[in-house]
Amino acid sequence: MSHVKIPKTQIQLNVWTIGRDPNRWTDPEDFIPERFTNTCVDFRRQNFELVPFGSGRRICPGMPMAIATMELGLLNLLDFFDWQLSEVMVKGDDIDMEEAGNFTIVKKLVPVQRY
Ligand code: HEM
Image (cartoon, rainbow, N blue to C red):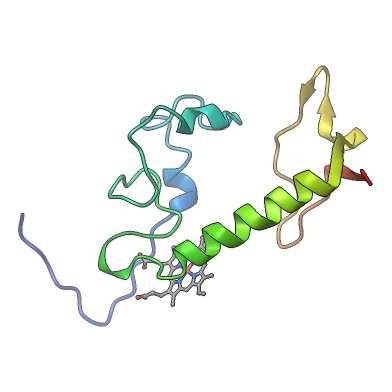
């Protein structure tokens, strides 16, 4: 494979669209976290359908810190609170996974203090 240099040009990948490509993902709009178990697709490697931290020599150097911070934050939220759906979250019998908000996100889950 030959490499082409494009000097003084910034290239941005549309990771949002890649992550919703129906040619790559089954039911891409559905929330199916199990899709990431038993798969060889790994966001740390060169699986270009999943590149939240970029890839190659300019991959995010803060990735280990970001993962540790997110895991710690998430585990604390799960440990200290029970979570229930707010009324806006329920759609029929199902959970409404439609995105809301732009720069600010509407709270769809309600924390209930456990202790
Ligand atoms: C969820 C959290 C984070 C996400 C999703 C994220 C994502 C990214 C992405 C997509 C890039 C561009 C990679 C590329 O060009 O291929 C990047 C670059 C970078 N990130 Fe992160 N990042 C996160 C957290 C962090 C943290 C915590 C730090 C530092 C403590 C950090 C420092 C950097 C730096 C310095 C670059 C530039 C690397 C370079 O251009 O060589 N990031 N990040």
